[in-house]
Length: 209
Image (cartoon, rainbow, N blue to C red; front, side, top):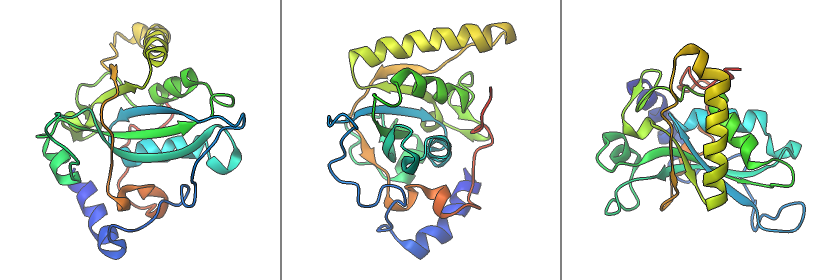
């Protein structure tokens, strides 16, 4: 946490709260290749800088791999904790998770592929922790946006558990819950590691298989 705050302070001071995300700039009224509205996937797996970074590295928007737009933000918190700030979320008092919201084209990338990639890129067996980042805001969670997503997420979780964790004696502790209210994080958090490559990155955000 302290490393993250140290990484953030000079960047926030230089750019303030109005800096625009690099990949998302100018994208309005996004449509899929079929001319329909995109679907939304919402994941939490530790520091949201690294979660967004690894998804966009492997699904670059410019390469038309299915991800159309991303945003980091806060979700899953207490109903009375509205529009929380980064510091409030980091305190753990609001109950929110740092999360990534993905708008994607299901004709190019399926929701189950994104769920599996989510599992490939963090440690889903640690409770409220990724690496040295500790607290409920760093919990592993899938926030489902439809009943179908709930079913798919549960199925993929069972498949990943059997294929990658049973033999190691580890248990996936990821929450799979219906999505609640979403709040965008402050502008300087959006695509932070693309704009600040030397910034803090959690070591669990890598390809595990």
